[in-house]
Amino acid sequence: MRNLLKNPPLRHFSVLALGVTALVACSGKKKSDDVPAIPPTVVSGASAAPSASVATAVVDAGAPVKAAVPEGPKSYFAALYMQAPVFSEMEYPREGKDDKRPPNKSVRLGYLRNGGKAPVIPEPHAKANCKEGWYELEAGGYVCGKYGTIDLDHPKVKLAPHPPRLDQPLPYDYGYNIAHGTPLYRHVPSHAERLEAEPWLKAPKKKPTTEEGEAATASSAAPVAAGEPPPAPPEDDTPWFMKDWGKEKPKVTLTDLQGDGTVSRRMVRGFYLSLDKIFVSNNSRWWRTSNGSIVSADRVAVTKLRTDFHGVWLDDRAGAPPTNLPIDGSGTAGIPGSSTAAAAAAGVDAGVTTGGAAPITSAGTEAEGRPVAAFVMFKQGAKYVVSADQKKVSAAGPLPHFAGAKLTGVSATVGGQLYFETADGWWFREKEGVVLRTTPPPKDLAAGEKWIDVSLKLEALVSYEGDKPVYATLVSTGRTSSNKEQDHRTPTGSFRIQAKHVASTMDGDVASDGPYSIEDVPWIMYFQGSYALHGAFWHTNFGHVQSHGCVNLAPNDARNMFNWTEPLVPEGWHGVFAGDSKAGTRVIVRD
Image 1 (cartoon, rainbow, N blue to C red):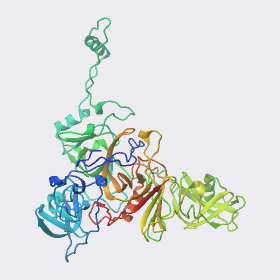
Image 2 (tube, helix red, strand yellow; image 1 turned 135 degrees about the vertical axis):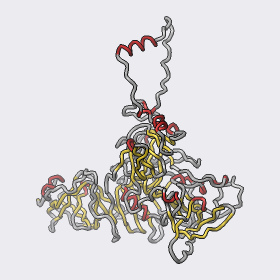
Image 3 (cartoon, one colour; image 1 turned 90 degrees about the horizontal axis):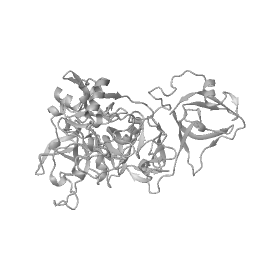
Image 4 (spheres, rainbow, N blue to C red; image 1 turned 120 degrees about the vertical axis):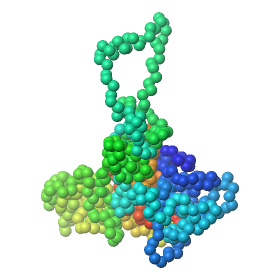
């Protein structure tokens, strides 16, 4: 991926469905956005308006001093650019050894995004390095007035894209580019500009008759002297997007997709856009994207949330109900069926003795941990009832794929099958899915400290507060291969969340998959370079490897973890960065 502020290239991302099932991943680079000019000595790194690219060099964000909040109606600072950086001091951070300015303690804390509004103390502080004055945000930190305004009636504020929907699984609506070459315009094109950029709109030329074609071929064939090689075929100057690629990916890179003039870039089929609003102009329907680009609505298929799958909270806080049902109808929710039918589907005779029983025990050894949650991985599972004498097991109703439940830690072996008691009183059969267990906390963990355990073996995640598990779910991590170009394994080790973004664009060139681009990937939590936990709305393959290195979560899960992990994102901010004084939540990835 290209970084508009010329930060170092990075890996990143997860699985993309080009078509519907093709894969992409965290092997690209993080996307940054256009920003107003800032002093030449601070054009990149911490002072450059950040996006996902900030994980290249995360600095100590410290613990910003909370501003004194004045009495009366709350005032807001509204960002007017895609990135309005927030600093710890009224200074731009130094940019390494080549920066000749005097040292200062300023670090980047986070940023606001175009249209974002953060509570602010409305009186600006005048300084030579920001003629518009520095504004102090109530959550702490300072933003230069050239990046925004406190006038909420400002035309650019009113015309800004809608803010992210923080109370929904997805913060934006998304669209899928259905054909190669679709242009993204800087503004609504004129009729002539559109015909130039979209040649497929022109009336097709009349095809020559068989006789005309043969005559043209014969007349154009130059004589070849005996013994001489035939002349080289004429160079094909057909644009890449007008060629028939069949099922192959076009042999283009992101650099090849860059446009000029009215066209900012072109897209390969399968690119995703973040959508702001639809409108009509010049008798055509257009989408404005969340970053302000314009695209023909005829070339974009609006995507829907494909699943409402989510994990389970393991403590007493309000959270997900025990059963999770796919929205796309792939589950079995609402399908009528008796316990006998459900048992038959699961291979068990309801109410029939299944053999000798082992005593009901508290399952799990110190080595393997205590069972805390379970998820159905079959197309259909069942709830079970273990009889009081421990000699019978019967099915008590169907469970769809992905149904999850909190476990009590009690298990029973009946007829050679292991069952786990759920917090709702029914039993889960181990054979029908995956059981998640606790793992010992890191030795240097502080009391009550938050941390996340990701198991590559189980493709699952359990989050903790100290030694107490609080949330469990399924994930999709990186695919592995003996072919280096196709090996996208997720790195193992102990990391900390470095940066969090409500949403940010990810794109890149992958040797095995071609170029990809997804605008506003939701709920991003970078923990190592460009590797992140983040939401994935383009697939529902959770519980199986799928990505190019990142840890994919279902949108509901990603939002839950985004709101739970440190550092927290203040009101109105779009991204925040961790540092030594305010460490991000620990993430442990293990085989």
